[in-house]
Every structure is written in structure tokens, then in C-alpha cells.
Figure 1 (cartoon, rainbow, N blue to C red):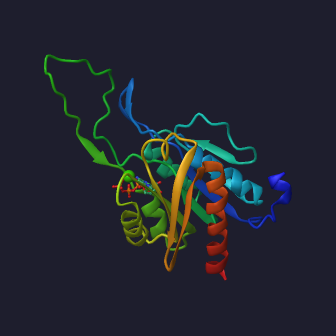
Figure 2 (cartoon, rainbow, N blue to C red):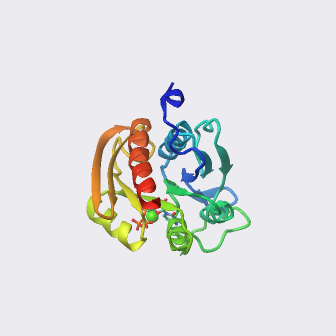
Length: 225
Ligand code: CTP
Ligand code: CA
């Protein structure tokens, strides 16, 4: 019904969305990851499809069914996601980065399962991953670029700072904690762009995705013309 009623404002446009959690291997049986479920990114993919847009969904770990009509590309680590995004970025009109990408990965991946020793403590050296969103925003011919900011505190301040530092077109800030944000059906979104902001409040991710896409379409069409 939604598809039928939608004015198809994204017909002819290509939207790349990252979603879910990346996994960074420690050894063959262990990894570092996070609580992301992919729900926000998959809901956005469905909202874009309902507007007639072409969707490439590059997804880390998620148990959700693939949105029908999207080109789904499963990836494992932050590096895999970075390479898949770069490989597909040509002719993308809108990039939406909902993935919870690891900021650090183990500097060395053990080829064999690590055994416990007599030591009571263990430290793992970590190294920084590539900031995928930051790299896309730096491209000379970049798409309309939308980031997310997951924060446990000072949500608006950190989000404004990320919008400006990464030179994004728009950022959706969400407080993470009990019953909202990661691994939840609900979220709270505050959307910021240069010159404006809108508080979308608390709701189902499916509904918030439609409201957020509404703002994205308006700003995208405005900045294109
Ligand atoms: N992001 C990304 N690649 C990374 C890290 C983050 O593309 N290696 C993207 C996320 O998908 C999100 C945005 O950057 O859209 C912000 O992620 P967030 O973790 O909130 O911010 P960071 O810049 O990583 O800063 P910090 O974790 O220190 O708050
Ligand atoms: Ca981060």
C-alpha cells in the first residue's frame, strides 16, 4: 500500500546504505562487535524502495530479512565494508551511513585459537579502522551524505560537532541506552543540517525511517537545484 501511495520521488536515483554491526576478528573463534541489529538501515532501505529509489544495502551482521528489491551485499569487517562502499560509490546520489562500524580492530589476528595462560590479565593491542563516512564525505564528486551519531550523553553537541568535522549534509543523532538505539525496535532521532534541525522524537524505527527520509529528500532535492 505504501509503495502504491508513494509519489516515487527517488525514481532514477541510487541510494547506498550501510547497516548492521561489523565484526573484527581476534582469532578463528572470537571477534569484537557491537549491539547493532541493522533495523534502522533496513527500515531506511524499505522507505527508499517505496519512493522508487534504487538501493544498495551493504550490511554487516544482522538477522533481518533482505528488503525485497534492494541489492544486498553482506560484509564482515569494517575493512570489508569500506572496500564494498568504495567499489559501489560511483553514480550514487545519496549515501546513508547507519552501520555501527568498529572504530578499532585487533592489530594482529591470531591464526590459531588463543589459549589461556597462567596470567590473570590479557591486553589486546588495537588499531584504528578507516572512517568510511569520513572518506566518502571527502570525495570530490560526493553523494548527498547522511551520517548517524550514536551517543550516550551530550547528544546534540556531539552530533553538531560530527556534522561539521565530517562535513556531512545531514546527521541523525540518537541517544543509545535502555530500550532505544542499538538492538531495539524503537529509536529517538534528532536530525541536524547546516542551517536547520528537526526533532523527530521517539518512535518505531520503521516510522522514523520514513520521517528521516522525508527530510533527506527535501534537502537533497533543494541542494541539487
Ligand atoms: N562511521 C563509519 N566508519 C567508521 C566509524 C563510523 O562510517 N569507521 C560512521 C557511522 O556509520 C555513523 C558515523 O560514522 O554514521 C558516526 O559514527 P559514531 O560511532 O557515532 O561516531 P565516530 O565518528 O566513530 O566517533 P565516536 O565513536 O568517537 O563517537
Ligand atoms: Ca564510532
